[in-house]
Image (cartoon, rainbow, N blue to C red):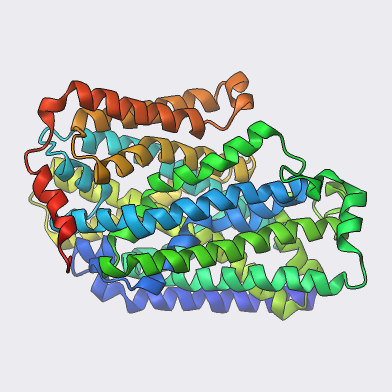
Length: 494
């Protein structure tokens, strides 16, 4: 086992040094402007956009959470992946393309920038509301994902939680604070490729390990409901909640930023197709891994460590060759940091650019903003570390809380703002507030939480709030809205 740990450690260190080198490579360019630091100067190609978007959105929720869910509920875990794939393809190929055109035309670098410019909000109420919501959910989201890193490193090395979470945070800071958005998106692209390979390799490895076994009959013998019905061993309300998860992808700012940074809006449809292929492959692989793991460990108690969300790490360390296992562990680390880096960068931009530069010190220079962004990045990471030491909820559900809250608060506003000319700033504000409040109240009320995933009522009530309040405040429709929508007809959008 010592040799196995040594090989795994060498691979992880090599991988980390590679990420750090990439951050240093882009460091000088990242310091040139806030547009470069936060959006890579809108120059990210279609393939990178497609895979980096998928890796950012799925993260540890896929390699740890979905695998564990498939182990417990069977093929029902697919209900979480199918809607995500479809909504993300639509988001990137159509709605996201519109967002890319709008934000470039209005020179909006961040989501609060877009809200203020799209709705002509001179009072900055939308910017302030967005800042509050982003800080509330994003630090919690980052903490939940760092928690997954703590679990994995604790399993492999027996690390104390404080040491494990600090190590994960340190790896992320090494390249994010130096290289900015371009370093984040390029490393996430690399991480997406590793995640893709891992979710192909692990199920094939398990199939070869179980050769000669009647897999379907064996799974049925353990728990028939795992594969006997489309619902698996899950309830109908659980399935309904999973179907709604796809709606949340429209409100994830770390995903919307991928759309905003795309180099050419005209080819975003191709990016959407590539993103769909990536999602289908890794999703199917994750579900297959969870199901096949049932034949290795029939009950959760038999899994080393007894945690279903660590199945991927256990397979890598207990069953696979050390070299292959080390690569898989690197993939799990990739899954964690591929989202945390963007979450922290978004949080940093919110505090530095949206709050400080736009509301407190409008005369701040670009270089001072970038420097402050790096400092704020370190501070927000520290807060995420504190939350990452909490283990009150499983990764799957804690991430879903933040995921759903962002989806309900921003998803309806995003979709309606790029398709509906008559939306007003008060309608947008109402949608954000309703989405936030319903998510929090529903999540922290046990009786409501048991009924259905909080995203479902929060999202649709937020849509209703957007529409109703916009109708009541129609006099506040932005004067330049026709000009903005006419820009969608430009055959060569910039």
